[in-house]
Length: 527
Image (cartoon, rainbow, N blue to C red; front, top):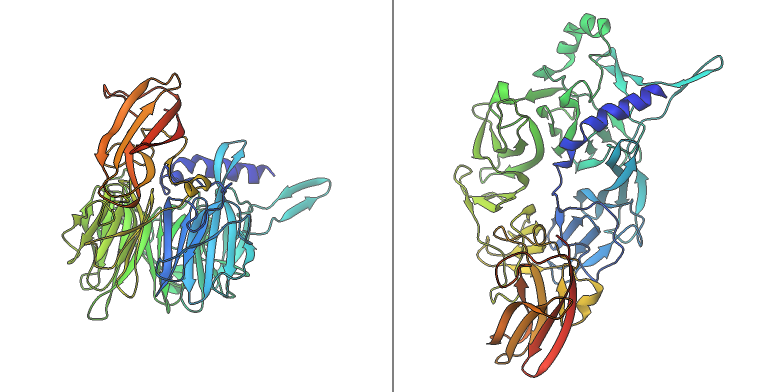
């Protein structure tokens, strides 16, 4: 048991870094409310093809089967999914895998835990929960003493090596999934890289190169056999010793597999048996900590691999890189931006960052796209950060943000907006998020926003005022402004009074006056 506790303690020391892989506004707690349509507004994962799109958020799983005309929501409360929010998605036709994660309180503090992987083979009509990929806990009994094994043995090209047993869901959250037509691949913080040959029913550990090795194959292992046997713990499959064994991102097709880790990028061309290991030092990739990968198929049919990296503080950089097949080297065209996710078609590459969505046609020069909104500005995405992006075969660009989903059918020239709606949104007059934290909620252009929704006809005068609990007016949002639209629309309040200062914590009342009709809603402000 002491070995198990020691393992947990060391993994816990790495937890601060792992938290950076999810947006700070992204919660992995289960939803208490099931929305009609989208579940959750922070869309961190996108996967799909054709008219079908699957979306993951901190509150659960959503899908559209008609290119965004309508949405269906799934959660662990009503489907056979794991606990928490979506941490990874993979789609192959009507077969979908979704990994879940949640927050848990331990003796070491609040940590992330894997909620398991669920599979549907009928486009979401039914689900099978497969559990979290883990190793078996091996009990050792010697007389009256009981302990637990730290390692198992695994065969690596005919040489027996050790593999650390990961026997807990804590710090074993699955960050990415990929299906290559035969094998299902999964990456996790504590569990490393795993592969399943039976659609996720069972899993095998996969050995990646040791952190200081540029290549892993049968010749390398045979040449190193005496060193491996002389120091088996150092040459073990062990995320505590080798950063390249902490896996975060994976892309796979046919026999090609790319894996991003805390120690670089790994490429296999034989289904995961032998590997090339690229690092900042040996190949010029922007950074060693790789959190997202993208496969771009170019017009000539060749593939280009893109990688999002975070600096490890060892001279590398946060940014976006791509692999140049001709030079066997990496190029870094976008630096000093945290790229959460990457999307592409043959002609365009998109980078989802904390500072918006960036686009490039040549892979070398990037521009940031304007904010997302309907053509008539009736609905706007209030989020500087973009967390996910996907380009479908029909050219539709889907973008997940901290305030909902945007889709463009003309390469970003115009957008349709889709947002999750709470139970109170059945009313024509309401405000969200509630409670509202001005410094962190719906941040657009560096400023938080409370969205005030109302319905008016074109030409009607609209006035909106905010009052404190004593019914003193603190802010005039609108004063008899004629509506230019008919139907639902919105305005925002930044949580500040007329003098420009943030208001105090408390309950605030919002009066919405449409001609002579007066409507009230309230919101709790928490700074």
